[in-house]
Image (cartoon, rainbow, N blue to C red; front, side, top):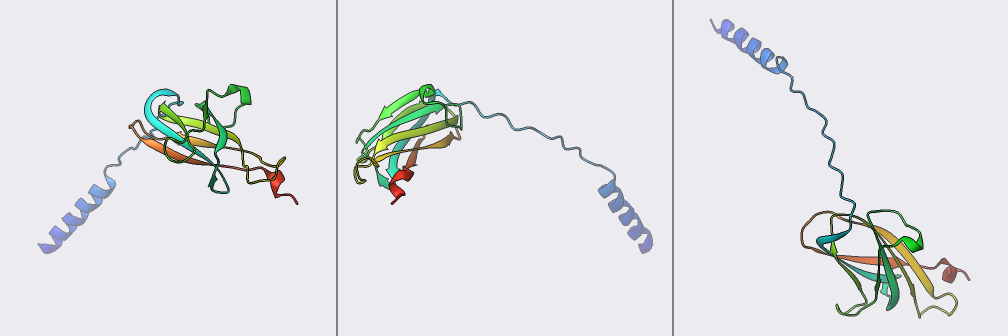
Length: 147
């Protein structure tokens, strides 16, 4: 009698593991919004050269891209202010999506003629919450590294 129960149990186990196959469809992720104004995110950009804050810079932003656009195609421009106790440029009201940030400035610690610095970076706002993002944008000029 026990063997009958064991055989019945093994058959039930075999049937349960091989009888049904769940079909999992591949679900493509929703595309990320392009990025732009009208949202709740705030981006605070602090330009830096060798991790030292730069007091003289102009910061440009391009909405909806992760690549550097032509200089005449940026969507907004900001100038340095010291409202947060450090040199920053603030871009309020951003939506979820991609942005390209670019800055040009002057590092007065370098010798004249080699003191112009610039740099850019891709930035992504990942959610729709009211949030402030701090971006420390590293800038450089390879000319001042030459001897």
